[in-house]
Length: 207
Image (cartoon, rainbow, N blue to C red):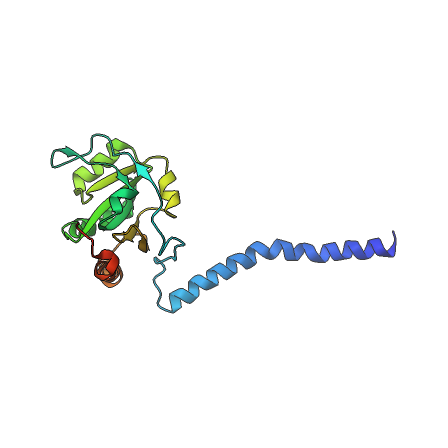
């Protein structure tokens, strides 16, 4: 074997361990970022979204079949329904245990006539969604059934539950990942909602 071939083979052998270690390096970097946020007192449920400050995606979802509220079919949900109101868009599913935990807070919020609370029912069966809301109450003025999960992809949803604040012009202003608790609802979510309501983009709320 020539000296050149020997040198080339040795160089390849030296490179292999570096390539093999790349996934570990990437994981360590991500873990480090998470740890820094945690140590700084940051809320790891607040994950930055590329959609913050941008218009809500175009979507149109059919209603959950035979889901009624006050004796009337609850209508589906589209982007047009978000215009003219400050909206809280909650992504939920009947099979989602944390969704049950935050549900009383959404019920409470639905009593605030300055905002409309709407839902996207994610990868759920209609009968299960009806049972879920029948037992816990329905805080949603409108609900879109996203059985295939395609609309939630456009919203950048990681999982359920997730909750967005959308101003009256249809722009996403805030995103909360995970279930709302009494603490995060009071300390994080409500202050952000109040900012949107008080902003010029929120002056059309309830119109």
